[in-house]
Image (tube, rainbow, N blue to C red; front, side, top):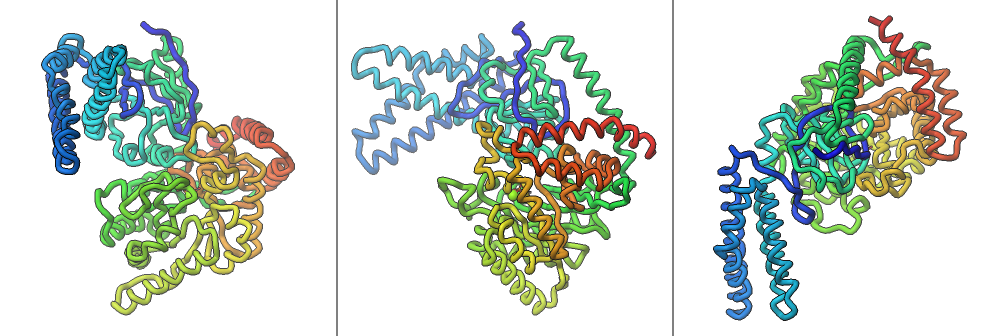
Length: 588
Ligand code: PEP
Ligand code: MG
């Protein structure tokens, strides 16, 4: 057996899990050595033969198109590809690799065709060029095999820990929570939307591990530690036992925290803090409620695109919003308009190719260019406002013109609804997200034209520090503790307070208890956090006094480096921890 291998990645969704590895691959990187269970050989052979047939069809289509455009001579290239693909010896080798050696079809294709290609490459004449043709065939076969990856994900029927090169937000959203205990990926950064979905679905996850799949064949034991960002392949008995103890301890803490559900998030010196939930899917509203939230502070509506194969209609929007509003009687629900583009869902309306998608046509910019889509969403939000305390919020506002245009469209849609006698709340509060340094610098102007603000630290950190939130290679530079970020937060909260406008922080930072004291000390009284973070954040709020938090915030603001701030905040949390556990016990 291979020795234990401990890998360090980026922790993006908390929780520890121990299970069996399932490896998922994609085109363009090494296919690891994996084996097929004897009972699955026939199914896998069928999959292989289907991929061969699909590849042959693709090649034939290309041949016919090229024949029509360029003539027979060029079409002959594809004729040769077809002949190679159907070569009797090659086909027998592939089948025997799966049937007799129990190789995974992807591995059989990759190994066999690469061996053929190497033979051609070794020939010192024009025939060596044929190696490229073989790589082409390998690529198409793998694409057709791995194209069934979605089905592979959907077909998971036993508990596994998914190990993948990368997972898109949509693949993550479609993971079957009953069987997928956790996932780890080679790519991905701390603020990516895959990470956000994982946290929403409460699937422990580690991303940005770098290349490691070549060391896994699938089926072996794995420990995934989503709290520390650690993945352990082939753990030894001692390590498994240690983690099992940790899991037991976590269960006890969770029971203690669940008892806080009906208690208010009130500090020791009597300041009431509002803790609302961030959701991506309507079903998460119940999870927030069962943890004692004060409402929904951020509903990321763009995730509607994940669950619908087509452009959502007004009724799709309305059905989703009303489900959330009905689940939150008497509590606020902040619905954010579509924040499409960048690393989120790309749709028919998002540009095909952008050099810098995070700086491109995303979010409110896209909505303002796609008015019919924007109006459809606003109509649904307004209709939902007749059912409860709905508030609307515009993402990524960077200029006053964008804010005014968005408000104008909203006013126009209101008129439309009124003309048709459709019920809505004419005084529905309108807010904006503060996610760019420009928005912070101009906040004294914006604040006069909104009812509330919500600080999106995920993007604010990205744009302030010029660090891609989804890139593992600069993940160490993506830091909520950076003094520049703290100063922007301080300024935003000061401006909002002076204007008497309510402010919350809805970036991932507000769900991390390391920052709770700092944020309270900066004057924040509303935190919008992922559902799983509600109990812990509430516990910290109930364990501190605002007076102490102010001292902590002042001290942090006086520091000049992110690492110094982080170490200080970590110390402050540690100091609080023993005391907080004791308080939790006395509260019940
Ligand atoms: C943010 O940027 O902090 C935020 C909450 O929005 P999102 O993560 O959806 O971009
Ligand atoms: Mg954002």
